[in-house]
Image 1 (cartoon, helix red, strand yellow):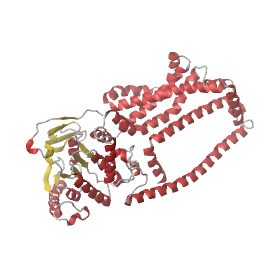
Image 2 (spheres, one colour; image 1 turned 60 degrees about the horizontal axis):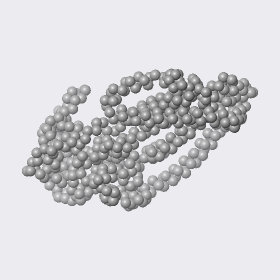
Image 3 (tube, each protein chain N blue to C red; image 1 turned 90 degrees about the vertical axis):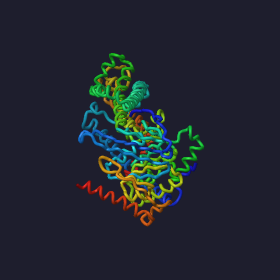
Image 4 (cartoon, rainbow over the protein chains, first blue to last red; image 1 turned 180 degrees about the vertical axis):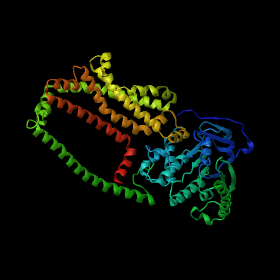
Length: 277
Length: 289
């Protein structure tokens, strides 16, 4: 464990893109593996994400979606190209983002309220503000009454909600979510998608959301980024014209869904043919 | 801040209520079961002692196996004269100094090795080589270096305790889930808070395994040291008694050692349950399932 400190070095501020919070510029990522030699996980990715947008990134497993998220979080470094966060190049850990991993990864030795309050440092959140913040976000997640519970005592859906509000509670401008609803059953999944959208409509933080589920990608997003399998490239970006607030439970009937989903499916049908060859 | 322990609202309250009802039912079932277990256990131990008492003098020479009644009366006279108390106190002191210092040093070094790759790369083979030495074989050297008083035994206890704690803690550090650290660091947590709120709790199950497995070994260390050269201590008392065929006294010494280990383990177990209470709940669920 190297304990390198956060180093986000200032770069030239480009005023014409001041509404862009994340800018990915020609980013590639290579991995060296013992069996297959060098793998190109990401290939020349460029993407701008404006403030307050809900972006989903969809693609087959192994296409480098998670890698892209790790690069934005500064958990790993790009092999070439660069990532700007609020106009500054990400070098080392990007502590201005919140991160929701695939598994909930609540700290099992902390109670629900300790987990939710974990990112609230004492300077920005003095005692009273801290308690208020924890209380609000636990309410938001529908976990009132479970403050003193340990993660081992929660159901999968509850830990997932706690994991999401843990990232929201310290109010980062951007939340990165790595297939957070992947392992859940269909019903729980829909309930959580619905709750996530409600929270987002309320807070309007920028969300970059990774998924392999096409319906989920369309249902949640303003824009869907479609990635291809190795090397991971951006194949297309689809605008989702559906109005908000959306009804997750009857998303198929909502105007604009078919159009966006059809568009996405067309791209994937093409992709699958390539994959089958 | 809402501090109620009762779950509130809709679907969740039913979940909570069901949990509670289950917990009560399981609780009484466990205590009934626990009673049966205690009964059988007492019968086995009682039967063994009875058999021992009957066998001694009838089928087997008493100087070979003594008997429960002889052992009990030897223990009484031993404690009344103050001899046993003195011997126990000496051994206890050796453990009281050697065990905590060995454990803390082992845990600290295991932690440091886990955090620093270069430290681990340089010293790991050396430590593994040292670990290959049967450590009790070093006991005579400690007598040479530190004399026949308590310090040579403290040294042996330290050595045995140190390695077990070091290896367990280091293993814990190697097994630690990097994602917890990444998450904490993304939340701007570092320094002491990272150590005490993330890393140490994450490896604490390993740390406690180290502590609890090293407890009997710390007693072994003290006794081996005392066997080799000493003028006091339970190990000395056992060797002396065996030398003059006072078998009952040998058993008295063994029983005292057994109780030392049991008491230390009880204390460690209590602390462990308290520190790892976040984990205990899952264990119970697994037992029921």
